[in-house]
Image (cartoon, rainbow, N blue to C red; front, side, top):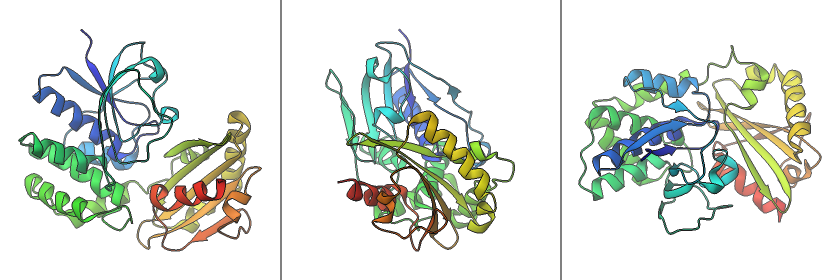
Length: 305
């Protein structure tokens, strides 16, 4: 019997990769043959965490076969998942996002909570099942929480995330602030990325009422440094718009130190953004906005109605 594959969304971030690894290990403890895999390239922030805790990089897959048993972490929307997901057998989902474009033909275990990170949920599931986590797995979960909450600065962060993070820091013997800043800064090294790589680094596709949109996000310590490449970024974005027949492409450049974002917005339906923010030179500055899930996506959803 083939192993159950555990994976997160395309263009994986630290929560996606670390949660897949942890979930696979949790399944093994319960007697399930499981394997963590990934649906895209590992970014620098995630690589920092994997190297720090001496964790293996999950194997890359591009599709799954019909009836392959899978576990989804950190996502549920099929357009964000692996090719062939519609015909796979989804046995479990653990997620902290909205539920959309998701259906199964059989009952499944579905655990979703409005918390800042999937890894927080996994830790709570483990504790409910009286599991003990070794320092490496605790460190990976801590890394995921730091990443998704921007070291507790994101509005998605809850008191539960903070409590779990401090418990994990104790298990893994990690100084949260020192390690967290080092990890987040590792992810802001964008200099060797092409414009095409940068806009696909963390890009998610949404579709509503026939309108297809990509919302991409990159973290930085200098918004202006990223926008020195604006012309080339726009050229790369325009190619994606034409190739994927998008109505809108939104690139959110987020300052992790000052907790602000600036959007680069292109497409035929820029009015979706302009209902909330004034665009100048295809850009809009969003003071105090860092979360795509809790701040940017709800704004777009509201303006699409």
